[in-house]
Length: 199
Image 1 (cartoon, rainbow, N blue to C red):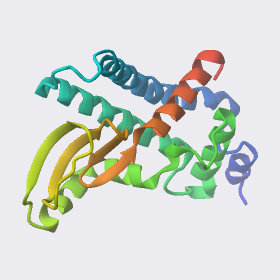
Image 2 (image 1 turned 45 degrees about the vertical axis):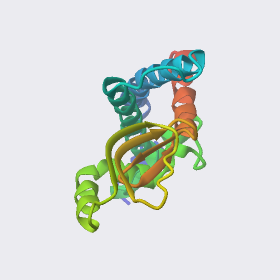
Image 3 (image 1 turned 30 degrees about the vertical axis):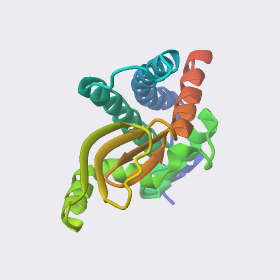
């Protein structure tokens, strides 16, 4: 075992002065996701205030879906800090992730750990290719949808991006993600940054 490998293991993959760099990188993703969470919370509040009596314009629909996608993209980016895809040479990435999980108080029960979410977003271009070429696209084809869960009545429905308000689920290319647990975890990290000045 060489000196570098020893030092990586002893330091848990992060030299103490370097924790600030990781914290800044993570803070960017958390705060970028929070902008979308706040926008989505305003929309939900508006739907409650109007008791569902509002016009779902194409512009509003796109904005909601854009913010959901932004939230999930940043959740996927955060996931890589805490659950890297490879351990790295001398287990550098693995050790770094363990140190960050301890520092931020995350466990393997976190919804941010989801590989399904990460793979869907990281390889979205490839997933789009596969989805569009896997079988004939027939039936209801909706590039964007926000509303209650669709009852297709046996007719296939193909959705590029959808948010089902009644169950809090975002769907893209046939893959569903429950939004609230991810929102809760990002809000938890946001509070960590704003309650502990040196996080």
